[in-house]
Length: 438
Image (cartoon, rainbow, N blue to C red):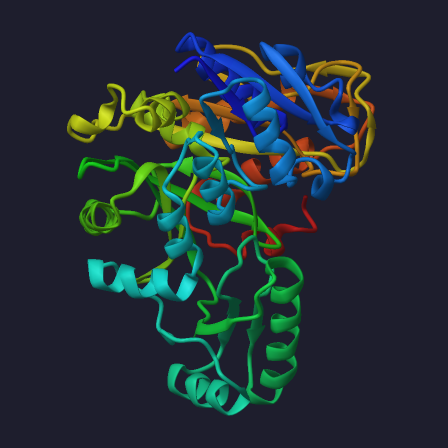
């Protein structure tokens, strides 16, 4: 275990490089022509340009990525988040090339990438599943029958999708046909597969996910849940652990069934199972077969370095999975700082102080291009209580300085200061409700 290529960019590439340094493993960064001045490019032991700015010609170019890994004599590839991190075909090509894929096997990724198959497996493992079908929608007649059985509103989902793409909420039967056609078109456009399934749409749910770590040898540990209910257009803005609405009974139910599912899958690496919770109803949504953007909040309450653990597991080295699930302590919260415009960062000062962490690839002088994800940084804080975290986060965000472009820093402060958010009694509709305030 001497060298790892990071098939990603931005803050997650920086985060992985730091973990590799702790393990005394050399890092190889990749970058597009638009990212030649990226912080991860400067931090890595070796950096390789893999193509033009467009991600289809660079970060999604499997041939270039694997060639870069082989030419630089890497032992493994870490996919990070997004891009190819949940691509079964990429994971297979990596292993077929004689390299180690730091994450689940390509077989596991393929199974979980099929949202219908994942629902079937989750139900078998004892996880509560959203009311809905367990097969693809064949045609409009089939769709109408399923919707009538479930009851409106319903949601149509791309079976091989994610990120809010290929989804349509339907309130009444007369909108089914147009929504079905639009969902299929979008699913084909983004995922090259127009398979659609149907589920009951929960109108005021909490978005809860559980973090697991597994070594592929029947050892799985549970690292608690995260609440990701503050969202704009299905994109998460604020995450925290533990959730204000998950009690010990529900937590134990999710823990036992989630561990059972990962053992049956022979899962290897870090993974997340997502749920919707509304009143007394808790429903499985999907499994993210990769590390998540919001993993730092689980790190702070569990005191585990999840990226380091992933690397150790991939190389079958000593890791924490053979020990009991750690006792979780305190509260942690993360805010995603997003760019609202493009341009050169003329000034950057990250927040500092006790129990404050900032994961970022920013520095004064770097150019923020329009080609990639808008996330600039993640500010993460921890404390003994939720209110301590909220207050600490507000102080941290007020201290943070990003000049040269527009960001959502002030919007995030306004959400954190909102009475309903502070109460903990809110759901995924919170952002819409308070949009005028922020």
